[in-house]
View 1 (cartoon, rainbow, N blue to C red):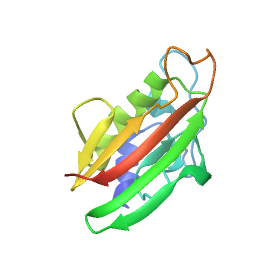
View 2: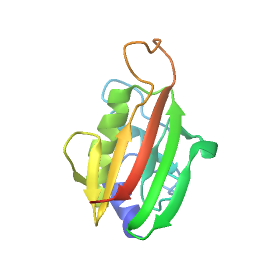
View 3: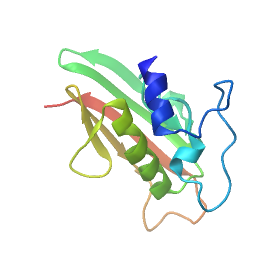
View 4: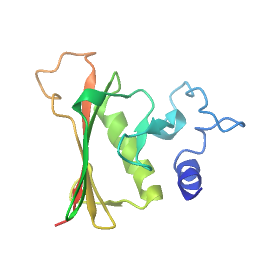
Length: 140
């Protein structure tokens, strides 16, 4: 129940009255919270998968180590990297994650969450799908 409350705080426009995801808001004021999370990243119970991203299940790894869990999940979508950054910078603090050393690293309860865009760069074709890698590892 706390996760639902945190997500509601992170994305107040994301849920319809029946609790189902609402349609994305159009227009220039539609920010990352207007899209809201579509689901959760596999291997986690409270890391939202931003609407517009789709997981690539065959690339995911989830296991427990003596030092804590290790999760690596990949997602793709036709979403600008800056929009993904903004969504997670806005959403994750409501779920207990604290910003780390850069805008794509977060810490919580002995874990480090890192997001990156491995294929993004100057050679990426305009309009190409963005690949996002989510990694949760024990905090050293």
